[in-house]
Image (cartoon, rainbow, N blue to C red; front, side, top):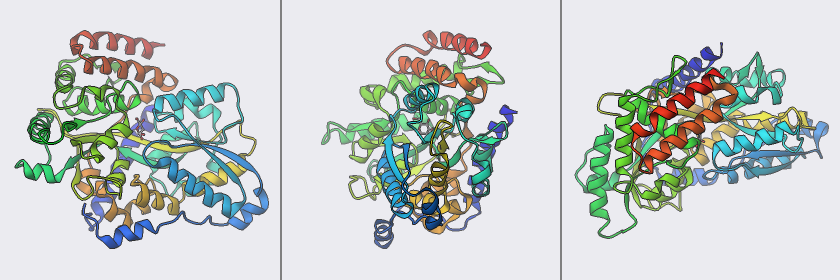
Length: 451
Ligand code: GLC
């Protein structure tokens, strides 16, 4: 059953892609001033039915453990403020740790202590199975709204018939590249293979370093944390090396995986900074948006910051699917976040009203326009203004095959398994040949699968 659920998830993301390809409007990466001005004027949408909510729950206080990457916290504050103004429910917004696995540990601690200090929490797409026992079934109150969302994600978030979290925004890995620099160095388009990327990164870096000693070819999430599991899955799967676990068995110890992982290791300190082994999303985004990198791998949220007023690369970059290995296809790791209500909350009804607002079409549209996050509501993903502002939604990118992390195999042990993966890969990036690391990763993963 669980296996099916995750397969459906990849199908669902395919559905977003389908929506993307059905639309005639193909987004352009250049923004007209009028669109930018319009975006600047966008304010947090009003809460539907606010008076009725106020009458029932006005004056109550809830705590929302929310985003901390990019401008996510600013968005959460703006939305919480609007929600409080309209409904009289006070929302205290607490940003979670930036590394997903650390947020996981924070929630594990709170739930195991049956703490009522968290009412609403942001839940990573790989967690619903692990946290289901601690979360409220949202189906009775939000089941109707759930129908608006991509059904594969709803199924991912439905455990034993209970809808334990509402989809909030989606994610998939994409390549950011500097259009001005590609042109300057004689390239007509983004790299197709990882080998092309390394070659282009080297040439651009050699040229740019003459005037900017901080300049680097390629940045990504190489720190020892959940983000590296996502990046490495893309490298390995796009080189035909499998998905860490295939058909219930660890497969990471194979020659195709070793070849691509060693190729990545060989770039560290050459076309990618030595410090990449401690980069997460924010460091990746800052380096690229400061004008110090030719290429970056990140999630769609980086698009909006790069196109924003404070960016040094505004109008000078575009997005594409990630490169692939010599024999393999481009892929993108499935990410994304949900909103859930804790079973230990003393204000469950007010908390559910907050989740209703936060996962409504108006708020998803607001998030897509102001934060370039991937909508999980079908109609919002099709919205013309949303498509125009978020070029990663165009068919050529949005239809890239998705790869999923092996959460379905490990369930409550997923975090432990991912740790084996990201620690091993980080060790490789730090200089140890893949063949000395992959065998022990494989046996540790197989042991976890047996437990
Ligand atoms: C993004 C993804 C999430 C993933 C995380 C890893 O936030 O949405 O699914 O776990 O990155 O850093």
